[in-house]
Length: 579
Image (cartoon, rainbow, N blue to C red):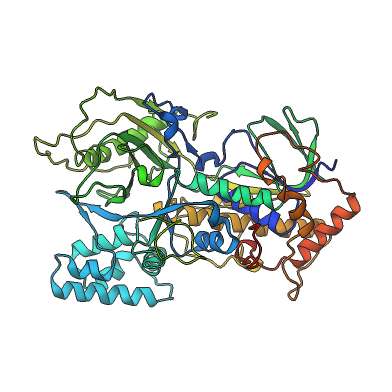
């Protein structure tokens, strides 16, 4: 049995899952390990009892630790569709985007028909439509701040806020125009692709399900998966050795990919609440709604996501509310969970004030705090008329901020009491590749990064540990950009791995005329075992035996012919095996 791999990947985050699938598609031998018994790591979707919730039917909940939306145009959806991974997934459209002000929460019109139906003066409608049409067709990289650009369009202040925070998802008033308008353009170009909404909400909790789908694709491509096992890694200049509990064979790899702390990226305060009554601020119950609270007093915008049973994330009649905002690192005697709650509790109360009355049955309220040193719990697409190529979809000092005014709801609609709340702080890691004693750091994208072309090797950025430590503080991507940012990180990891292995092999260079190496022998050998790529110990079937000479020859061939980003290499029409 051959227990040597080209690449070993630690952690099944969405970014690492994308990289694993691409590396396997390119013909490299990949082993992917995670000490957790579930996919996704800090992107995972967990059942309610895995978060400590004592509520009825806890296993029927799929709660995302890092919820995100998928724009209908962008690097992730392109990879999902072109690679065929979309067929493993289901999505629903986001119904509504809303903006909170001091008095109420208002739905924001996001398309032409809704804009002209909205109660907006005609002159302002024309100015808004002119600005949006211009941005939908623009390709420049503007300078200055977003608010400067919006004020130049002579929009009134209420429309400036709506465009800035509900359409461009800016984090604060002085956000750069380049990154904010890039998100606005993505928003505008995404609307209409799979339906009126520009955003898709993955079923079963979000990014964790996406990570699992890419891992499945990697398994079909020949990757070996070992979950729920403790392991130790010893690294030398020549190789990396993995000793895994209950696995008799010692595994080795030429290149190691794992997470490292990224001190430049500001962490995210998050809140999760489970409720048993719908939230409603536009007559209809909110089933898949994004709510944005603009920043106040030098703080950051707070983004909320409300999901119901139609996203397959909770039982009928239950709803999950997510809140998130950047949380700067400051000296504090409070635990991370306490800091998160102090920032987000007023916004949660504001949202719940829009919910209906409590149910008659006696249901208790519970708050569970994340341990101070943890970022995640321990152990713990189909629209009518969508094309066959489409994914499956269905219809300060302590972080200064003035708490929002909470209007007194009518006597017939008291604020709802959540069945369960959970506050925590999450750190988005960078990734590191280690090969032949050389380390390369791949930072995660930030909120102010602009879209980049990662389809070819020349455009893939990377750096060293010193580079990472010297970067100024960066804001994490906003809610609609998280999955796309993960796909971008996955592409960066892929190209860093390809460069490192080429250098190790003496400079195997790509041939522009050569097609992408799909390693048919590996794919054929792995196809029958893909369904068993779980936490079970690897066997001879999942790790086909080959000589060292054959292995090196195959890898050199794969590296020499890899000229494109594999997830964008469209499957053959008669290829029923996906990747």
